[in-house]
Length: 513
Image (tube, rainbow, N blue to C red):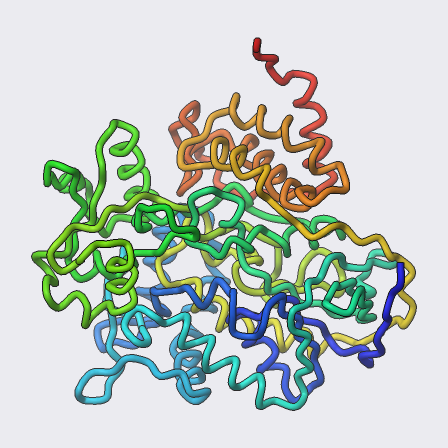
């Protein structure tokens, strides 16, 4: 295989160009940095689809302590309190920094930031842009900032396929672009590749969000954490479109209610109602659908003709599906939305592998615990990008010019494993289905085919879910519906996951045909 090894002078390489990757690159300026984007910059990032905003204690009745309390409550016993405190304390200044970078946040007539309310928040603290298009505005402003920054080298339409490891340390990146295979020698790599929603049939994520960064980290030997915790958004627009358009939690924050086909509000007796934590609402909607009902989000009373002004993007998506949200209830169902698990990192974003950092959804910082508080994800990406950049800048380049490994897996394609993932790792799980999934995924993960990297990620999630014999946050086991008193984060390497799957294979049930 022909390999074009480029001399990048030991510059750090950032893989991924969503909010986390863009912010990390901007924070590193004026230090030279290489930013790899698998698509043209500003497109196909999960961040771009974010309708919700950024959570920060900016109101006169709010404080970082209140924000922290809400975060810990939703995290269901697994948050790292020190990390969570550091993030929520830094959030207000991060909003100010974004404002300076040109992000046009929504403001009231007096010029003050307009603060929204979302599920499980005790105060109005969600900052939005263009109503329900916060992610798009963030990507627009940050992309413009990156393009203006001379120290950032952009490699667009290029996909990282493997991390090169030499003597237990990062030595480079192998990537593929339109001109062929490229080797980038570096001892500093930042993963900012987003989530895993594209492994599921029903998802609000771009279909390319298939855990690519997790596969890179796992194959390089890094430790992953809390993989079993996958958040399902309760109100995705129910229809054939993929990814599924999101009907933001902010709509429920304005008073919209969930009803069935008979107009009955089935969450009326649930504590918190429609603004209960997402896992509670998602399970309730899932059960209602499983019982043969349809589920709708009804905003006719609370918004009615004002719906289009308050939520222009959602209104447009509904109308494209033939629904007028001002006068009709919106059909919804849960969809894979966010991954609390990821590459295990410390407070500076460092992984267990020297020279590898992770930022954004691909990382597991401990902020979210078992369950993410609404709108804490963009906040985490923006805030922790600064922590990561500071750590990367302080690390010795120590770069190596020689890249000896040229093994390159094929372009990943998860199509054949989506049915397995959707069945076994959905809203309700059980041991038998998880064991069967692991047995089916193991040979795919061990092969060198297009589905192998996605299967590696799915296999590790299945093993993590099987090991957690309790129900916590969005990880609900029908065979273990209670919670364990011992609350601990889970850790897993690819080697340990394969060992566990091989052992399970001997006991996998054989079904008659």
